[in-house]
Length: 323
Image (cartoon, rainbow, N blue to C red; front, side, top):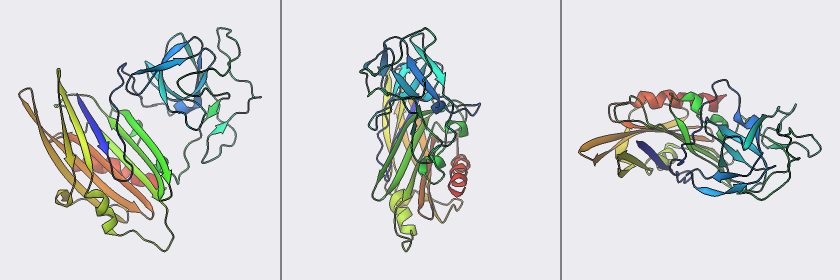
C-alpha cells in the first residue's frame, strides 16, 4: 500500500492516516454535490475522526451538513464556525436527506436556512431535532454550501472527478491570513507497485494579497520550489518504510511553460523493504498567474508515470485559474 504525506511551503499540512473503517470520499459521477445533503441522526451513533478513531457519540435529532459520501460513511460538519468535519457510518441509525439549493446563494459564505424554515423530518416519526451534545457543536438549522467563488483557491482545485478511478481525498486544508488565502488538497490511491500512473496527487493554491504595484518574480517561484519536503510510505505485509523526498535547485528540470512564471522539479527516493527495492518519483510544478500561485505534483513509482501525467492535471488547475 502506498501513502503520500505532504508538507508544503505555502501552507504546512500534516496528512493523517487512512480511516480505520475504510471511509473514502467517492467521485460524484452524476455531478451532484454532497454538500446539498443533510444527515439526520435517528438513533445515537459513533463519530469517527479521519484516522478512524472514536471521537464521541452524536445524539438522535442532530443534523449535520454532508461534505462527502461513500458506500460506508458520510463526512459531515456542524454549523459552528469552529466545527471540524468527522465521519458517521451510514446505517439504519441515520438518514440522508437532499437539500434544495437556495434561489440566491452568497458567493463567499455559507448560507444558513432560518430556523423558521421547516426542516425535513426523519421517516421513522422521530421527534423534531434538537440541539444535543456531540463531537462538534450540533447545528440548529440546515447548512447549505454554495459553490466556491471563482476567485478563491478552492474553486481552482482538482477534485476526485479529475483523477483516475481509485483516488480518494486524503486531506484538505483551507486558511487565510494577512498575506493570502490558501487551499490544499491531497489525494491518494491505494495499490501495488505494478499499477500504472500516480498513486499520490496534490495541489496547493494561494491567492496572494499585495498592492497592484508589486509583481512576482522568478525568484519568488524558486524560493517556494527549492525547499519542499514530502514523505512517502510503502507498506508490505506488516512492514512499513517511510522516506522523505526533498526538492532543491538541483532537482529543477525542463518542462512546459505555464502561467506567467513556472518551474518544474523531479526528485526521487529509493526504498527497500522485504527484499524489494522501489524508487519513487516526484513530478512537481510551481506557477503563477498574476497574484495567484499554484503548486501541483504527482508521486509515482519510477517508470509508472511521467511529467506528462502531472502536466495534464496542472492544465486543469490552470484552466480554472484563468476562468
